[in-house]
Image (spheres, one colour):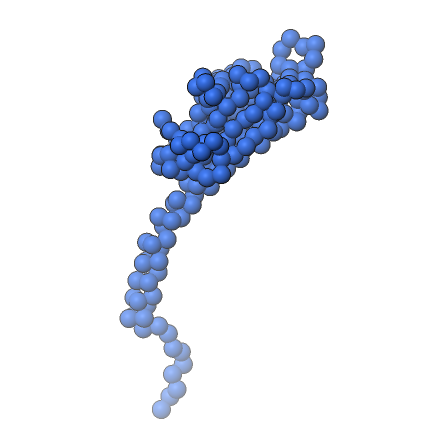
Length: 185
């Protein structure tokens, strides 16, 4: 009698393995999608906060007024209308009549969250100018920034810009820094 040269999987073993793999993927896929959406929202918030911190630091180090505002795809020298399109940083050197764009961060439409910025009185924040000396930000340019995606307010993120130029994030999703429930358009 000849010894068996190789052993492999039987058809039944292979089918059971494939069935278990399909079941695991089916269970894991929704959790993975939520993870990706949460990371996209957090990443956008962190990028905007970093851009504001960069603008504040640039203002102080260069002793100039530095403005951050919504990105305008059609003009490199002016602000746009919606924070959801991204943002741009402009520096106005002392003695200069015009500002120069330092950095632009456009966001991809459709995959980016909706970003709304409003003062405590409810007025929209169309730009933020950081000054090299206190108050670093005018009171009319401070307030809450809300980032919402298609999942609604329970996943929405928020942070607050203060006149000192510092930013505080809400401790959990769905509420402002003050603990007030967020609203998403």
